[in-house]
View 1: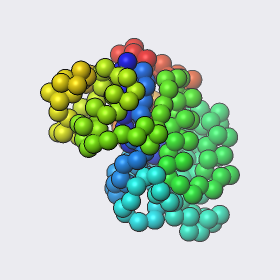
View 2: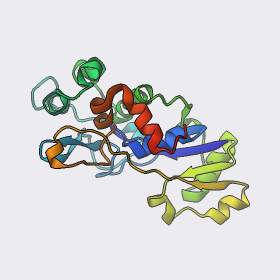
View 3: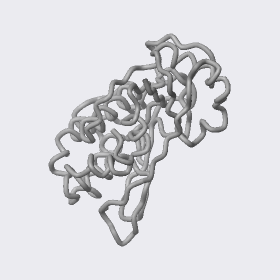
View 4: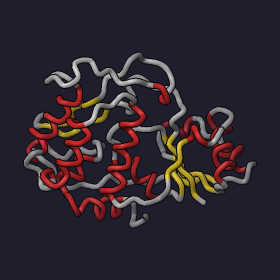
Length: 238
């Protein structure tokens, strides 16, 4: 079994979803600490000026993701975060090829529901991405596994709890702390993720193509072709 793991992300980018698709089991590390300025509550979309951040305000800059509350000051008003994101999507993606098809689900999330917990919102958006991109592998939350240790020791604990012999690791920050010798000693091999970001039609072509955006950029621009584009970028692996 190949297992991959990552902290929850707001509107996760295509590389995040690639790792999920290539694993037999994906573990959402929901019991980690909230990281201010990371992607847990923000991501980028393409506006007429290029890539711009959209995000969700939260209470406090520390604490566990499990109890990170959303700041809903001004709920229902034009300055509330949900209204701002929905307005951004409507204005800058309203003429995208697949916006009309996906708008009802997005309106449900960004106009109809009130969100209290960041984790609930992130997991809902992850399920939306999985549905629209045809990613069907199972997901479990780390908080249900009773993991022990830190860094590599925690990865060993994770693999042992789920019965995985291969850990699929991203090629980013994990390369700095992952002890492959310790994993090998525990009978676990490491597969390094290889992902080439796809190029696809976007709004505002005069700005040039912008990569590493939230998944909505692909889905709203390419609609039913999005899953095939994502699969091709993954080397055909699913």
